[in-house]
Length: 126
Image 1 (cartoon, helix red, strand yellow):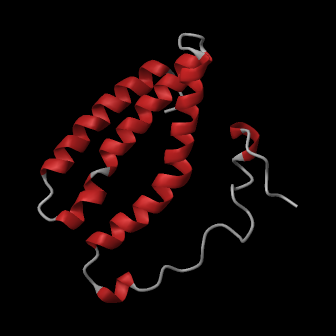
Image 2 (cartoon, rainbow, N blue to C red; image 1 turned 30 degrees about the horizontal axis):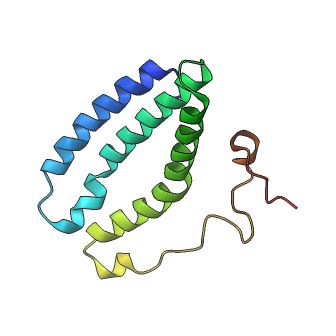
């Protein structure tokens, strides 16, 4: 949410409740990855709340560090792999399942340069 720990906490709880409702509507196993996205986003929001608590010195530095890495892991590893796989799992038309298209990241540009200033990872820029 990028507002405060309280906003992230409320958003995590609300989105988590919606996610539980989405999971209850699953009828086939291949719908599960897509239906689990709201629950995963809720967890992401709750992790972000701990990041905010660290920024305001209401959580320990190790807690903030773990929250940072969990947040980044979800945003830059889990989510980019899970969303296409979840959509592909529910797609029934073989013609639309075919081409994935080009990668959004040019070769040798991971992590994306926009990540570097705020996540502390060296840029892959030339």
